[in-house]
Image (cartoon, rainbow, N blue to C red; front, side, top):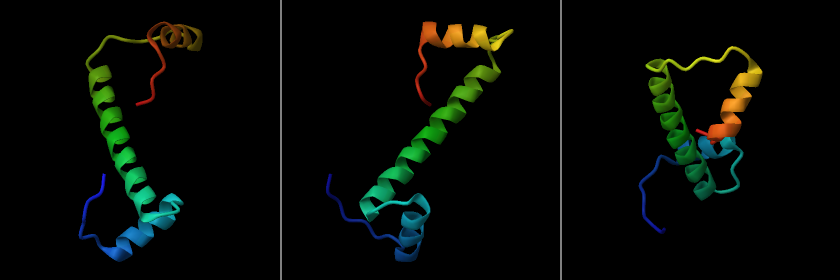
Length: 73
């Protein structure tokens, strides 16, 4: 998608360097993906906090992950 944005050039340069991005577009997309990932992870933790899920061992956890999927947050 093509759009016009008014961005702080110094911030964009810093983000590009910090993320190791090759272009401004890549830096913006990486930052957006990270923001979405953090939000999903926070939502998942909030859901887990109220649940009664617990595992007795790593093997039990791995079995749960194999059964219900191992999707990244």
